[in-house]
Amino acid sequence: MAKDEKAYAKRIAAQNDVATGVLTLIVGFICVVLVAIIAYILINGFGKLVDINFLTGDPEQFKAGGGIGPELFNSFYLLILTLVISVPISLGAAIYLSEYAPVNKITNAVKTVIEALSSLPSIVVGLFGFLFFVLQMGWGFSIISGALALTMFNLPILVRVIQQALEAIPDDQREGGLALGASRWETTIHVLMPAALPAIITGVILSAGRVFGEAAALIYTAGQSAPSLDFTNFDLSSPSCPWNIFRPAETLAVHIWKINSEGVVPDLEMVSNGTAAVLMVCILLFNLLARFFGRMASKRVSPE
Image (cartoon, rainbow, N blue to C red; front, side, top):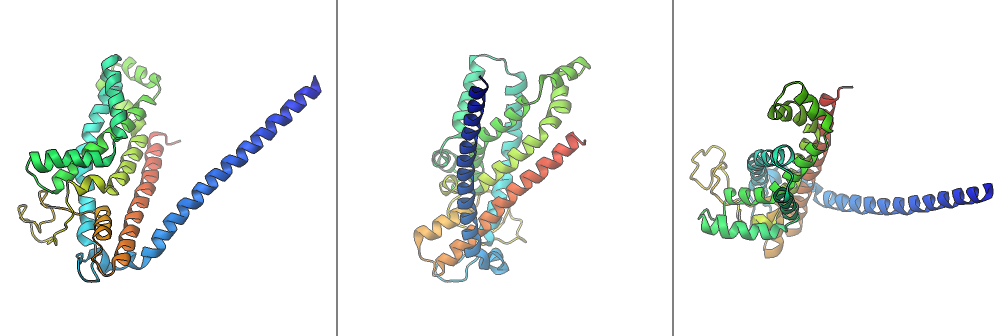
């Protein structure tokens, strides 16, 4: 009997060692590939990454030496507008689905639809935005068309992230708040939201990184041109006014696609590598910020 137990223990230990080794190799291979891709992009684009003229200059179409200043500003401007629109809506929807909606077939169907929409290809969102915002609403290729298309792209993801963050909170905290005489709304705002804040902040920043690098949806909504911007111009009807939401706005990701598809820029490879490096650095910063602010929020919620 003792020999059988020892043999069984050895067999289990051997299986664990094999499984651990295989999983370690898989994770190591994935890490090496990811590091190699990031290093390749950053090394090839490093010269442009530290070139202030490239980061602030206007793009050129038929001669070398162009920059990505308008594209860089457009990317951040579109991101901010998208988050301003999508975060309050997704927050309200997630709170309702998690705390107020009755558990029935309709609610389950709505949750299923949200999960399905979160995996919708961005090109489909872009085509819908082109048909509705660009053509039907008459806004043309503009920042507002792109921001609303990105909102449609981002809403299901944010709703799901915030909903999961709220549902992960133990029911004891809900019951405790209600037992102390707080209403359901007060319990949600003063008890549940602070507890879920770290996960919500992390989810919002990570979704921002995904939106920042989006191209397919913006090709059909925000357009593929970037007019020169005059930051002293506050005429919101002028195409050179940076804050005009009805002007076309090519972003970094769209710029990479455009110059490679047209192939008319003399220093195409250098501009493409530099733009890709800037885009990569921005997305890496979003991920680092998500970890930093998530930890800061966790410490505030649980100072011990």
